[in-house]
Image (cartoon, rainbow, N blue to C red):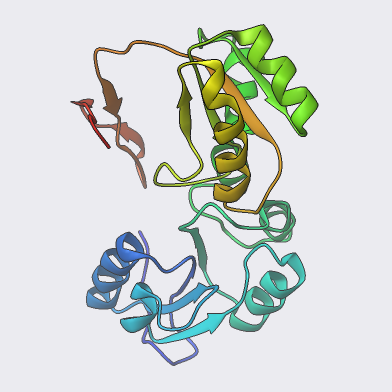
Length: 228
């Protein structure tokens, strides 16, 4: 059982958000109702979750040194990664030093980078995936397209909300796919993944909840996104 102390006191339960988007704002509001002291961080001022948090810090969370400084200053009970562009290596270090990252620093490190999660699924766990290749430069990208074949999907290894992602339907799309991926990466230009196209009937969202009694999985929710 978690005992929540009094905000702004020596008994306060503090939660630090790495990212302050709209979804984070909803969680911060609920934490405030429980009496949790909340610190919101993002790379720009007045981000949504900052508007309802107790206080905030503005900095790039890709800056590991600054992330460490803020965490060591605030001494949160929980650190919640809310965006993709975070110095996850620093989160791993902080967790090893006793700070608690939700759900874990390794989970954040793997899921916020398409290379990490794809290699875990396909190579470590042996799960069936579409064919794929990673490319860090244009020559490797062209080779990956030739190897995977057309149609294929191109994505930055770090991005959100579909930014930088495109479907290559013909050779005429290749230049645009590379340029768009380089412009849309959450951490700037860099490595991309080229995936074989899969004609899905639908995709699913599977909500997973970590709680005092273990881990629970909700029923999968199927959905389709068309023309967007």
